[in-house]
Image (cartoon, helix red, strand yellow):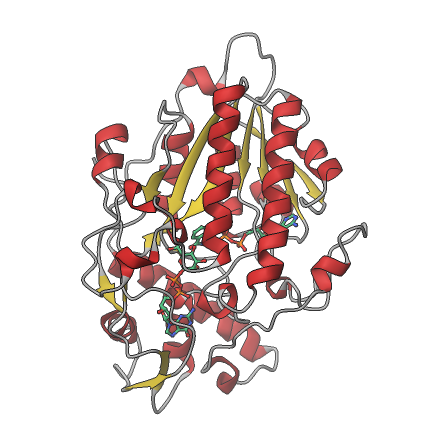
Length: 383
Ligand code: NAD
Ligand code: GDD
């Protein structure tokens, strides 16, 4: 089955017996990249979408992806109660997250923040009587020892245990998976868990340090002139899933019977050198030479094994990276054009930053408003 055929949510979930009016769905982190795309899709399917996030979406008005927006901090139990109230389904997409320029240099702060979010959203969902719960896990849960060569044959779900994730980000995700599984065993709540493998597409973070390789390479290919900068020797490999496949996969999983964590990733493995060269084909004057720099590298090779998802859901992501990345490139080009017209310089975009850890978000835990001074840079200071 092609992923271009969008999944249609079965009527029994859209109009369950005994529920009058629109079914309410809550999305924690719903102003973020994946959360806002999911909100848009669920709204279009007729659901009443509630979003809780501590920032507003940078690219869309609230009513494009939700019916109700709560500007709250999901590390707090009271905020999560507001989100989950009256919801039949809840999706937790909230996390203090980013690519290699963020997760390696922010290990303590992100672990605290994400643990608090994990606890509070799940427990609020249980208290509110939510029936189905989705948790956004990551390929970062996998044991680093099975990701030490570029020729990764594909990580199977069973490769997560025995556990040795590379960073605290992955360890927290693994713990959160176990918590969601325990809640399902012990309480009247169905939990669904997907391990995302590097999701990319329009509306994703593309500058500031939290962006991942797809957006960073597009931005640099657009702005660079002599050479394109890259962390590492470029022989490291990854697979990348386009946002449309990701949203479709989350909905297929949420409304399935599959209670075990599954990979939600592409199995199209590519080296960073080949990926950057593919992206540079979109430049008017062709590819540039690559300048290799020291930087945070992550694992040596990572790919998704999709046997389990095919067996259980009869579907797997299939949008070719070349197709998805061109759409992403064109979108980033339009963002850069806007910023340059407003006074930015092309040279602002040629290098990637590493986000330095700050305790600002920890110090503001009990404040009513989220941190504003760049602890969450994708906001550009807008709250
Ligand atoms: P994102 O940063 O765009 O979205 C996360 C959202 O969570 C943001 O809008 C952020 O403001 C919000 N958030 C963070 N802390 C919060 C808090 N304390 N209270 C309220 N909101 C808070 O990232 P994304 O790419 O959309 O990722 C969504 C989820 O998927 C995250 O859990 C992430 O860890 C997971 N994931 C993403 C990828 C990927 O490649 N994008 C890969 C693996 C896992
Ligand atoms: N971000 C980024 N920016 N990465 C670069 C750059 C750059 O300018 N240049 C080279 N790279 C290299 C990184 O060093 C890494 O080896 C590879 O590109 C991929 O980097 P990312 O896309 O940042 O992250 P990742 O694939 O290692 O991990 C991401 O995916 C996980 C899920 O698969 C992260 O976003 C995790 O948070 C996520 O859970």
